[in-house]
Image (cartoon, rainbow, N blue to C red; front, side, top):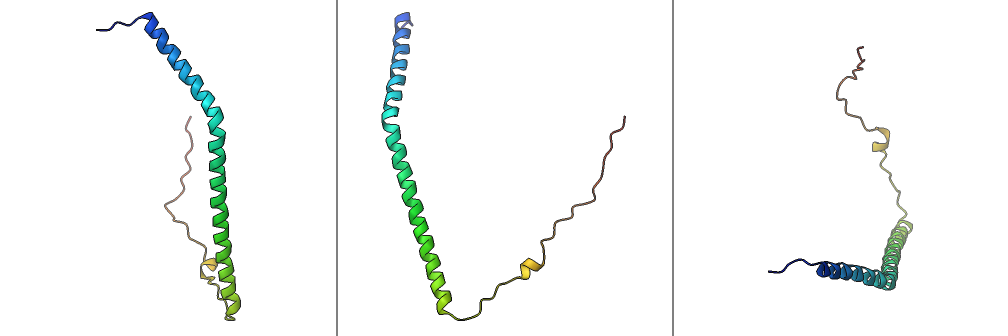
Length: 97
């Protein structure tokens, strides 16, 4: 059976502090590199999505210019505003002194 001692507690506290400062030091070195990589990947994904969006718009524009048909816009929903549900009457309550 082992007993707790002051020197064991002191060593444990020193190890915890040492690991904390080592981790802090390594984070200062490697964290900016990791963040830079993440930002570059996000930037590449964003650019790829923009290119796909632009290519899709160009494809749609080419279809519209090659077809000389009329464009029909459905305005049936615009004329009739959405109805709100009527749950019940509004009741105003007053405090009684």
